[in-house]
Amino acid sequence: MALDPHDFMSKMSDRISFTTADRELLQSSASWGTEIAPDMADHFYTFMGRDEEMNAILNASEGRVHRLRETFVDWFGEMFTGMDNWGHSYADRRWRIGLIHVRIGIGPQHVVPAMAVVVQAVGERLRAEGKSAALQESLSKICMIDLAFIEQAYVEVSAAAVLKETGWTEGLFRRLITSGAGVM
Ligand code: HEM
Image (cartoon, rainbow, N blue to C red; front, top):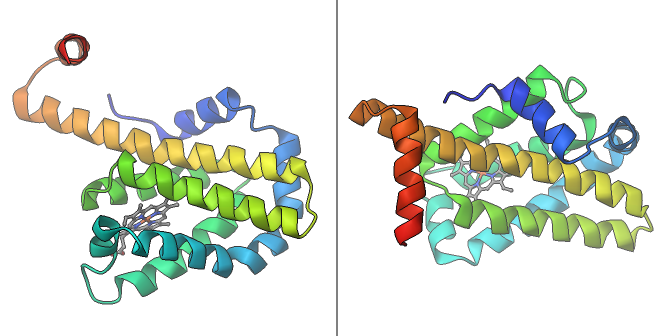
């Protein structure tokens, strides 16, 4: 059940039609991405700070918010540069980000609204500065790919932990999930 981040990256890129044109458009706007990243970080952390549960996670240890602000700015910029043209380094980095969130206990209920805020905030900024709808679409696509990594990490880690603990086969585990969903 172990996920290969490189395969996952190409599967998501195909599924969401993240094309060469999207990549070129993002790369040509990379300096704009760097410029607006701190403002996007502000939106992101203001939003999370308003939620009691997320605020507690953010402030659970000394210096965490400060560290996170910096990592957010890097993360945001990487969506534009693609690091290695959205290759292996990009996929490995996104997978690692997913694993870190699973380790801290941050699930879909936290991450999906947070990504929605990023998409919304960047959309407003794009419109305010008269940027193209095409750029907005390319950015939304890469945000969704990044979101898929974080969500998939949650599923993969949970499943791997259950299989390890119980010794069940993958087939049995899948049948239990299907029948469990059927009775809910
Ligand atoms: C759009 C969704 C999100 C993105 C893109 C994102 C991005 C990141 C990145 C890039 C890192 C650094 C990973 C590393 O050290 O390699 C990180 C860590 C972390 N994130 Fe998120 N994050 C998201 C959602 C959330 C949410 C909803 C929370 C919940 C409050 C959260 C809390 C944390 C925490 C606590 C860490 C570890 C900080 C530390 O102690 O070093 N993140 N995140």
